[in-house]
Length: 129
Image 1 (cartoon, rainbow, N blue to C red):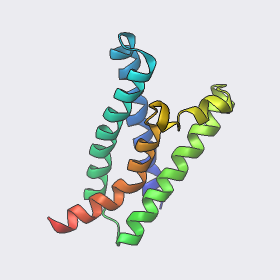
Image 2 (cartoon, rainbow, N blue to C red):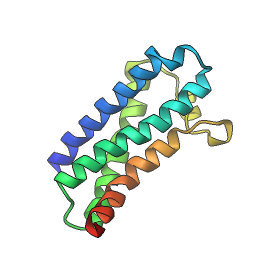
Image 3 (cartoon, one colour):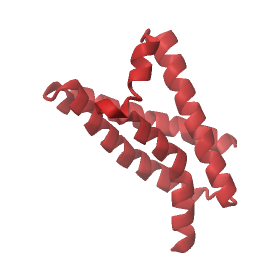
């Protein structure tokens, strides 16, 4: 699982770059919710490229392993989000939980679902091609 841990750090870099692009470009011109929504869509696309590339080069041994990789990456992402952004960045817990509020336009949950499901989706896609 070491290579999948290292790959997750690559996904983290992709996510940080996506946030940097948001903050330095369109985030200055649209409201915060719209910037969040655009960033989630671009994040899903960029993470898809990175995950697809990685799974193609380091294919899981089975569907089960692909699902475990997705669960591993999901757990790392959620742990990082809550631990880093609360204890290091100082965001209150209520703000962190608010990013899961799909009914009020928040789309972060879809990014997390993609991170969890993409390894399996790309594994299955690569096997069918």
